[in-house]
Length: 158
Image (cartoon, rainbow, N blue to C red; front, side, top):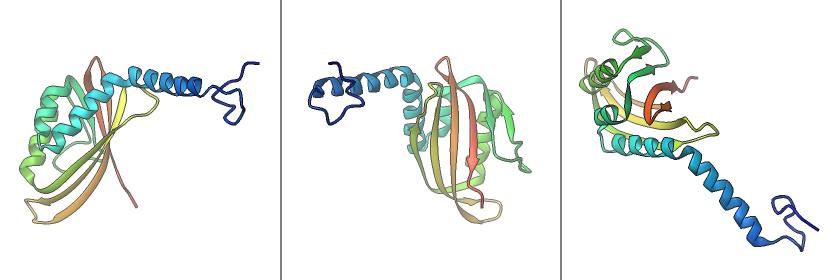
């Protein structure tokens, strides 16, 4: 009698070694498929944790990258295209905010092997107004040919 170890957890003829092998094979297949995206995500988080966001853009982003914010602002459009525009957006952010603390958590990966998400939290003061705010956002990144080709920011709303 052949028993599927993934379904028959309490039957006496289940071979524990087979169950472990099934789990290990599934884990390896998932890791193998997502590996480049996971490594890019880990590097992005590492650089952001070290306060090296501009270096992350230079190292990890494609020349034709697209950035999508949740909304337009007076200073920046919601959608920007190209590495120079993204560098400019990042420079604007650092020039206009005093960063008291920031964190990046992730990468979080799902069933797609070309995307990952990062959770960012920041405590910043807008230099032009002096208003201090605590911000949280989720960034969804899409990767192609080993480079980030799109970033999309999602914000909590009430």
